[in-house]
Image (cartoon, rainbow, N blue to C red; front, side, top):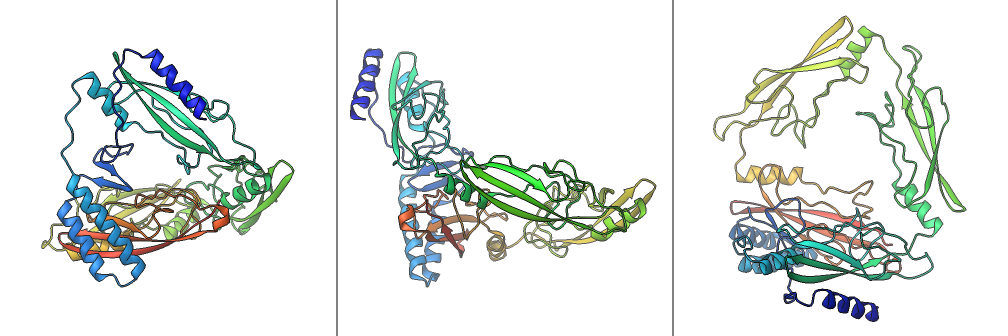
Length: 482
């Protein structure tokens, strides 16, 4: 590897001997690969420019004073210390680069590799994304130190066999603007292939049916959105239906039983196969019977509910609805009307809460359910809550706060990075502390432990802050080993 590195560096220097190479830089404190330009990366933290430094630090101190669990206190204390350092270094956004050298240096500082879901620099199992141009106009060309494993375009060519170790690859980036050139290196680790048995076991665990619309396993009324034919880790998946007259083996056809004949149970069996290893996973599904026009209107009316956002209910509406369905489970069309569209829009996508002190507001949502020549209405009387004070806001954000997991992950089995909100739904700032930052960082980056170490239990503490007040919420997660 050292010989490859020296050779590539020599090629770069010969090719660009007239270029001015900028000195090495530290990425800390620079904007870095995030969907929202208001965020800055520093150590393990995304810093939101909308944060008030003093308020966040004070909120963390309040949470620390309230904490009784020593592990939680230590995690919050570490976060507090880091946030103090960030606040001390916080500076206004740098001016737009003026010279070629500044353009190259800024693009170099911001340059990052994008990884596929679940991957990171220390765990590459899929192709990587390599930018070809910087935000300030620099052209970026890449060279792989081991093209037999990953090529210059970032396409994963080979993973080492399951019985061998990791492979370390250096990716070289040349950043060029006019005659100014610099380079940056990234070291990535390509993980070995799964053994067939491991691949099958992992794909079986993650395998799920993607149902159509609002269907579930206990209520199938329409074709599936998809039945995977390949697992995330490469297993081949073959599906078989116990009753192809009701559900086809590819899930693209669903024939519901006639009205009066009752619901029907169908078993879908997935054969997961890799090499000579195979296993099965069984899904027991209930296909709902069909109904006539008038019966469908009555059935859809009886089943119709508003899908409220978060923890909202009819007596406490604070945010837009998750959904106002336009098609009932039994096929009726549904149209909605709001008695006060300035408060709740007729599609439920906009909710304007009364100002604090103005009191709550009653809004009536009317649904018209129709099928052929039959129709009926259903009325929902809703209470839209006035704006919260700080304590109510924190309590509401705490109640609504949840971690967003990837794929079929959940708190008891985490394989991939998680999403941690930095802003509550009702406006509170949220700062995270982890008692195992080597496993889950405070930005949700997951580093799975080695198989020999076993699964890792991690406690994440969310500190919810608003105007000098703070509260905490604890999440306990289990990160699965390799």
